[in-house]
Length: 117
Image (cartoon, rainbow, N blue to C red):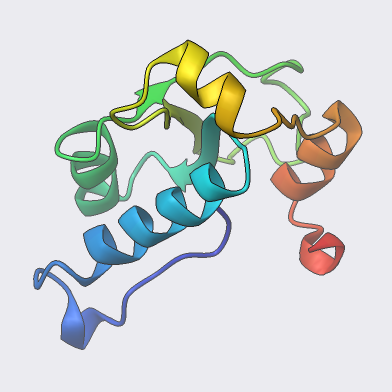
């Protein structure tokens, strides 16, 4: 997920949770089994939503923390969620082909190069 946000006037109404849930359904229907997102660690509302009711977890970055974006004050964290839904792994493999984003694409998305999608 990239650049997902809700206007301050419309927050705390379940809109963000609904948007993320729909993105998860979209990704699962296309064969993805893991969803990643980047969020600013200082965004308490988003962190509470993602780590709480939506079930995301922090993951270690595949590249070093220092210098990953050229900004030593970047407070972004990477979160992930397995999105098998209620399907078992075997059923998921039978239903859809598994896809994985290439590392270089994931890194470019992380660094804000959103022209790729």
